[in-house]
Length: 91
Image 1 (spheres, helix red, strand yellow):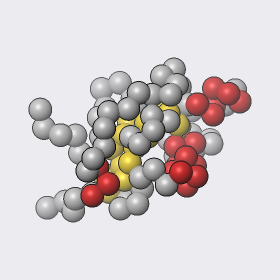
Image 2 (spheres, helix red, strand yellow; image 1 turned 30 degrees about the horizontal axis):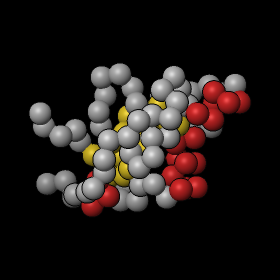
Image 3 (tube, one colour; image 1 turned 60 degrees about the vertical axis):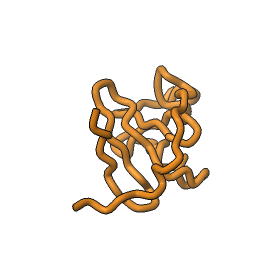
């Protein structure tokens, strides 16, 4: 059985701050591989396979613990604090 992440309790839906891409990459002309959405504030950042890793940098700056994929058709998440993959809720 997979351990539970307590950081998902109380999360409410958020709107993406920049629905067209990574906030920092758009501002600087950078590029990304995949996008991640902060489930605390809606920040959109690039994944760790991207050159600048803005989603992880956002976590280190804010301590917002949970992200989810912001890629079409993906709904998995990740908790930085617990280092746990968060599976989608069953429909």
